[in-house]
View 1 (tube, rainbow, N blue to C red):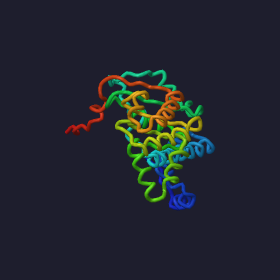
View 2: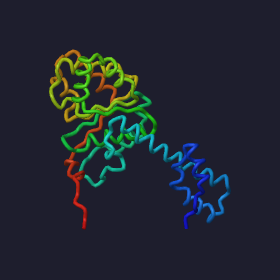
View 3: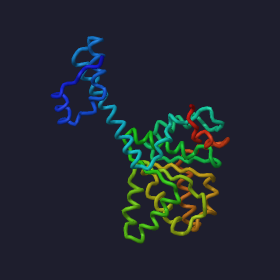
View 4: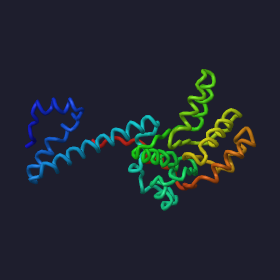
Length: 251
């Protein structure tokens, strides 16, 4: 039987902004009585519950601010999928030690094999560890930068991309880039080079990016920095997307 929480305690918890403790407190009180738990251990247990809750809420808020897909987390990956990649390297990347080196990651492979999901997963791991992250499709990010030139917020928009701990550009060079987009990619890469980490996903290898970019000199400079400062994770196999298809509920 769950313990009844007094109105006085409820009011005190509200004043201390600890009301969420009430969600688990009755069960914790029962557990404490059953196990004859010392007062100090009981308080530690309740406070640990609240700390864990705040960590989850904070990570979710940072993930939404980063524009990460909330359904694309590491624990959601279907291990039975017929997609192959270097799992030893992936395990290393999930430690985020690459961020300590200000190194980058290139996730390369054909359409649908899960590149975006793995990139999102790294973003979620980073937000859980209280890093700032920004995720975006490359074409949309460059479109925002173009628009910001018109309303005078370009420097502000660029700084937002430069100051995050981890910047994730999805679908790089999916289509040809004009001179402005090429210049913006160059600026981002040069400013973050050896300072902070980036993750790129693409259907094309870096050498195939060069003819897709408008300015050969800027293209060569950016791609050379990316290729020589990034771990390369290559995915091969069947499309992962059918596994993400919604299923009818069983009656």
